[in-house]
Length: 345
Image (cartoon, rainbow, N blue to C red; front, side, top):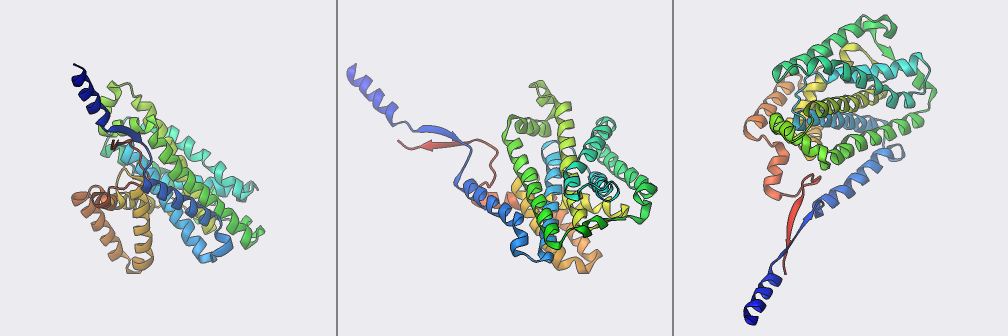
């Protein structure tokens, strides 16, 4: 009896222990690299040329808009083709507050996101009744209505557009410092905020809604409220990117502000990089940015190639480039799931 108990105790002691972790070596490296990149973006006036600063700001805007679309489609199950609506209303709000009302333009940028939040809350009351392709078409209609309304609104100079002449009162260094800090803050909110959201219980609820809304509701998830909140949050993030982008451009017109290109770029970045992953957005944004700089001179041919590439990824590599990388390395940069590790005795 004693020997059997001892043997049983030895077997128990030899069993491996199991622990749950949220961070891995690759994620810690990615965290350190992310902090370094944020510092680099914020400090661009100290080491970068004006042209490079404009390019980096544009890339940051692409990352932000694409990540907001990724939250909608990749996690919330809301496929929108009208995100340019929030780019336009926030950018115009910033121009009105800075150029017409005399507010500090760098303060006007964060305040301008109030407008897309309000527009999103109002339009969702109409759009939430639609589903699937009807919802997508509805978002495009909203964007077109806002573009047409802006084009005939005399207060913002209608279709002629506006120039941000107030920025001439700041030196080139002051403008560079302000827009660099805003870009770094935007990345921190868009990528860092999304990461924290997806690691929370609300992130689990979003994934459940995307996979099966009915099953998620049966488990106590407030599907309607969560979709509304993610819709408004995505509108705020998209609007912030629009305000910063057009501040760097110093001029805005309705065709540019409400251009479908914003939605097209978001879809391309997310589909090529990897739907439903933070890493995929970063990879897809870099791919698009490099392709745009190298091949945009080919015009329509270049756009056709981008469209075909998106179609190929959707058909044959639904996980995008990040999904292909994961099959080889299985090392997440921004893990949102709990990982079970076994410790050897």
